[in-house]
Image 1 (cartoon, rainbow, N blue to C red):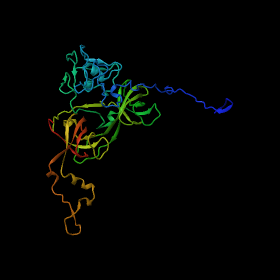
Image 2: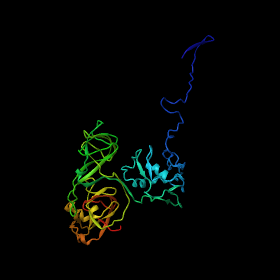
Image 3: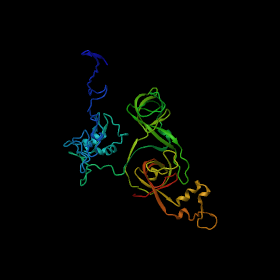
Image 4: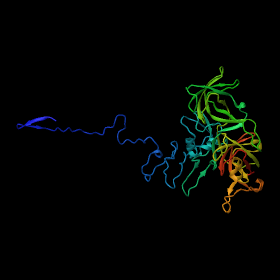
Length: 422
């Protein structure tokens, strides 16, 4: 603090420095007030006030209708384009998706499963490429002008449809595996990868050595699979020939050298980690759209095992049964899991002898013991339904099924029954 002389008196003067504070943002940060969510659709914006409301963009960018408001009686989707006849075939352009095409042609983007089911050549609905041809209507079907479909979700409104919607309770599930001879499906195997890693997944570029006689084309999609295990013997069950084959992913061929039989491909889908030695082949469709379908025959089957070697299975897991297409089963058939007998009694072989021992509390003696009696036979008990399965894929001697309901744990050896017309 400096000293100054004023009127002959030496005094100490305090100096005050005034600084100006600005609101300039720190380097690399956006200016104050910038909307960091401006690039997102309104349904993705954060809301601090739940009563503020949201426009909830259900409309598709390629449809002529604007975003649909989230009112009580608002339509779920907008109408499609008007006046343009629907062609029989659509040539996929860059940027097309099944969602956008259904919004444009049918006026309902939610119809993409129906469009997918009409084009079985599409192994993955998320992967369509420029130049692909998609069938929009059956051969010879008259084209329709104006909006083909309008789906409304509000109360008091109805839905007018030209094409049927996917039936309620339809199962959308990728084929996880099957039971058969895996050698007949092997075209080659993974022998290396461009990336320096052992465990391979979606996006990796792999090298494959193909068998003699196999001819590939660039752009072709093949399955990656592995032999899982053999089926263990189940009492009362028919043992289908072959082994469990588990799907691991999908590869798209990018290069093919028929001289060296070496192929290069990109993993476009990963259900599980893939490694060198995994097999490559054309094992049919990768995805299943399975609506419920009444059974044409009465069938009695046994649960063999799950996709994984679990002792018990439950809802939303997949199981194998010992009956297939030769027995009249097709995808969509419903079978119920039935049991008969005293459920607690069935657990006794896995318990100790003390499980059946109880103390007689109303006896004057010093805590006498007694053994719980087990009267009656299993055949005398009524049959109870404890679960339900849906056939996803029927092989010749076995089927892959999804557990859609289960009141108790499903175990290998459980009986599964279908009734004609159900």
